[in-house]
Image 1: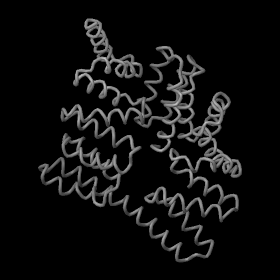
Image 2 (image 1 turned 135 degrees about the horizontal axis):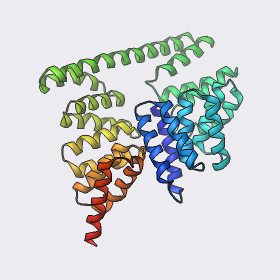
Image 3 (image 1 turned 180 degrees about the vertical axis):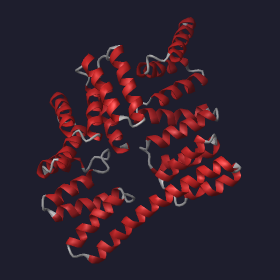
Amino acid sequence: MKTLLAILTVLVVALAASAQSGPPEDAKAHVGAAVRLLQDRRYSDAAAEFERALAIQPNDDAVRIQYATCLFVQERDDEARRQFEIERRRLGDKPGLTYYLGRLDLRANDFNAAIDKLAPLESNAAFSKVSLYLGLAYMAAAQPARALECLERAARNNPRDPEVHYRLARLYTVAGRANDADREYKLYRDCVEDQRVAEKDSRECADALQTQSLAQARIACQRLADPPDSRHLILLGQLYSDHGAFAEAVVPFQEAARLAPEAFDAWYGLGSSLFRLKRYQEALRPLRKATDLNPQFLDTLTLLASTLHALGDDAAALPVLERAHSLNPGDAKMTAVLEQLRIKLRQKQ
């Protein structure tokens, strides 16, 4: 799902940059509710909120794309296709729309159509898993040589993805390349085992943080950071921050952001931890980066506005808080804070 949301963000950011005016407040309220439901993985409820927003503002491209993505995640493929096709007719062949339509072609066993859509996207860094899906389409279309090229690229792009190694191993087996197949099956087993160990280590880390001193817990938790893997480091940072150990969370989040510079969770976790430590100037860059990566995540906007306020830059905090408020207009406390900030800035003029 994170890969899908990352691709969705590429589309939404581009649309927001060219938007002439925002949707009505009622539509914004439904969108804000939908975004919060998405964060809780309540996709069906989120889709219903997007539908309500579109009933008010049917020409909002960003909302329709989010709605279509919700449908895609739920495998409501015919409905998702209809929504993506509406946007393709309105916006043209945008890469993100083409990606989703290609994935839908693959699900529908229309392999040649999937190849036509996905092949041009392989050079686009925003679509890190497209080589895998293109390889699957070539395999199903009885083009093993091209499938092999794509899956080998997929293995280079996502070396810790067990599905890539499993599919590649099967293809090597069919091609009679037993040694290569054995290597990929081993990599597949290693990836699966790595995931199992990470789950075990995360449970032990959480238990240690709850029952032991922080110094003792660090010993158990450090296993998640060795060897360094961005996913494990993000998990480690989240475990530390969930237990109030914000200083300990900073380093794993920093390392995760270095290893995976497009990982929203790494930047958000780093900014949030620095904010909790009152290291506001340091928190500014990661929170801005997280906002760029996921511009509709309410918590990031609120933290960014709070950080700017703590640094004395209320003029910069105001538009950020207004964006946050538009996602959750029913929050009385946020409404009051927003009005206080507006009054304060007017008095300074």
